[in-house]
View (cartoon, one colour):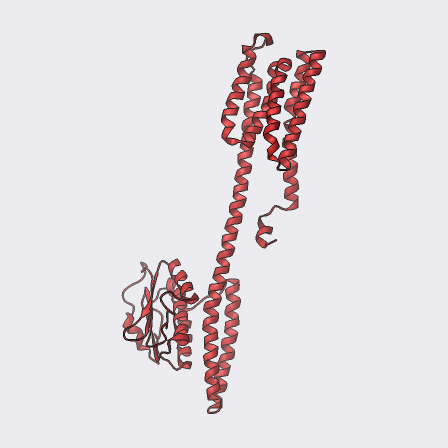
Length: 391
């Protein structure tokens, strides 16, 4: 059983309580046949009384069998049993007269619970019959069956209301289970996307720096040791990022990603034209643009075989260009791999757009644009000003 099943399935105590509630409600309906049996003593005697009691006893037996069929989910027996109960109700009329409609109360209430589509018609017909039939039949010497009609009406309505509440509760439980499933699925997708972005960048940087340290080992040992120390730092940071992604408490800083991107490009031998500051971008877009810079620069190092990479920031856009020949560069193709797919999801959630494609005569361009908020101004640096921070 999954965690979701544990969350939505009722506990044994809840099942026990629900079972007892149903048992009490079901047993309570036997009050109406008991009222009919009591009324028989005042209406008939002798053999007629015995026949009337037998009819009421048979009715109670059918009702119990109906309850058992419901409890065991054997619904194919319910309609035949209700037909038999209806016949027994009609058979009780000559003995119990208007008080036989207490039996009809049980039948109509079951219809209101089990077939809500027909509940209104059943309640209307049953109430009118209980009210008018004792008055219409002269041999019964009674007036309208007002008490029996009211008992049938309110009991059936109450049972129908309980059935509606039960159905609504079941729908709510199902909706809660579906919401929990969708939330769990969304969280898994988030973790998968974040792990791809985080590990893709970190492992690329570790690979590049390890290769650089290997090349420097025979020439500049001190520099090689410094690069390996940076590899250790990157490994620790990657571990911290993975833990943060799994727990959902990690943040991506645009300024930090620009700094890490500059270091990664330097280690890969790529000339970096990166902005010195990220002040042009509003706080609401900095985390998103940080993910764009991370994904874009990581893919430049991985795929572009570029000599130069530039990043341009404005209040509502971030653009990454390279002059590589790798056929993918910052975007890894228009269709994109997992990285660009995850990036498109992040940008779409912010209401923005992603453009990725080749440059003429060579290179690749990744442009992410988001709606400009009311707090954004045109005073920030344009795309060209971001190239002033050449390293």
